[in-house]
Length: 153
Image (cartoon, rainbow, N blue to C red; front, side, top):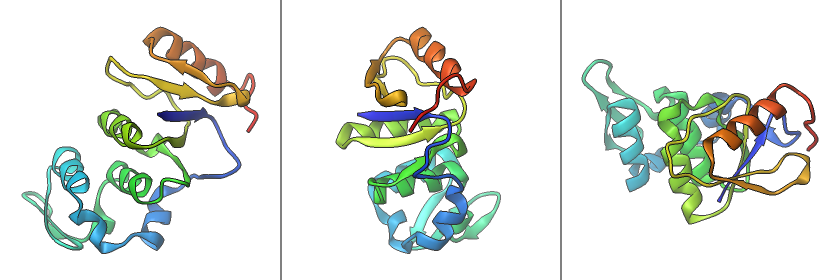
């Protein structure tokens, strides 16, 4: 289940790009899930550990991947951490849900991310555990918390 905390959480890793640069393992990109998201989101192909190929940018290392891909790789490889997924575009939403199908993932979100239907997430602000699958309820809850009405960790 994807568990979302809207707003600032005291344990969140906010700047996932800096964190990735200091924590990544070059072999993370060799995983089938990593190859899939790199191909889809960054239109690139994994050639070898820490070697990615793109028609426009040529060959580059995994620290040059998009912020969204880096965040997905962090969530996959360090699932006990709480990462800020606002670095992810909407194109990452389906992969967040895919990761959450395998194990519970707790993340922070500072904007309203678009999830294609059907989806099921758990909003965990105020220690409530509301499972949401309705886009309108999701939007209303996200707006409520992101406006700062109540954001307790």
